[in-house]
Length: 289
Image (cartoon, helix red, strand yellow):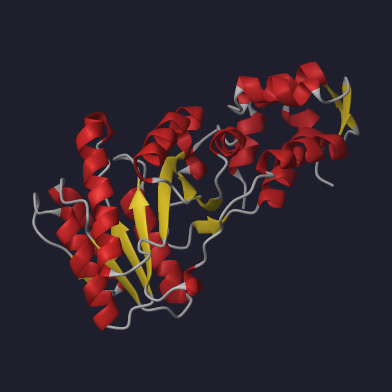
């Protein structure tokens, strides 16, 4: 599940050393390993200040798991029907691919799924999402480039209600460099969703590119300020040596990580399991138990 962790911690450790199981690690070596894995420096220093000079696996586990110890409003698809999700993120983060993976997952779970092509700023986004809808054999509400994205939101939700759809996934534009315009557009889309169905969107998910490491934190903060984010999906983790950035993201944003993307195939979107993630890190540091 967390094969990318080997990339994150492997570069700074000799292959023979990795085979040796050890009971403790000193602070200096641990600091180097965490920095190599792109964990935020301030977070590393904060954690090391609370640990002894010689650190056991149990001590490090308790320290790292505490990063995820925050109150989060977990939202589950079965709580509303249709369950409306709005997918947020900058262009290139993997929004469209992630939408297709979510749609595939819901369909595999026996749900009726509909897509809404709300990124009307780019014709390519509409075309790509339409191709995925055709491939997955699920309905999509799409229009031409330049059309009002809020109208797409309204039409998608009303169509989903009429067709007894379980899950609706709506794409959005991600041109963060025109932040003021994007902010107003996203706010309007959220308002219109609520008009079409009281309480919608039920979950606003932010897509973060895992290959960008800790730099994604500023993106997340910008989108959260615009419309409020309910949770995160981290993509492209199969192609990165920055797996430690998940710790930084969780520590900075204090919001749940729902899924991680570890490949291109539809099934390569997996639920994020905190304990498995931490133990994967510890296996690379201390050797597998």
